[in-house]
Length: 122
Image 1 (cartoon, helix red, strand yellow):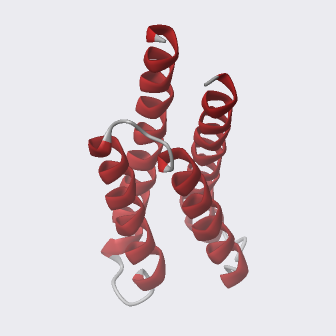
Image 2 (cartoon, rainbow, N blue to C red):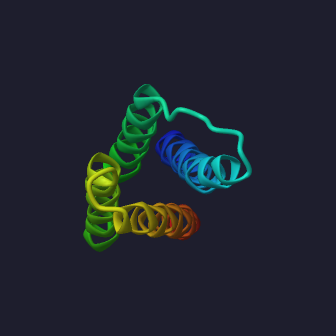
């Protein structure tokens, strides 16, 4: 169980880091642009965030005992994915994407906590 616990915890930490970097990126680019430091947003960076987030959620939910948490993380990711892909067409999706990133972070934190409880019970 320890090996499985450490893999899930590692995936959760990577997911938290990826979502945190995404939030910093989403907040930082408009701030830098507003002060005159125009930056072109790289589509490759967007797809890297999406892929990293997907892999972390996949690995984190792969062996979960709580289907509700898996469902929560998957729904949060799908919201993040939708917002990331269509935020150019609808400006409000940019803010919604930040909210979904926070929800992903929250889900990974709950996952780490629930995984510790599972480890302690066994």
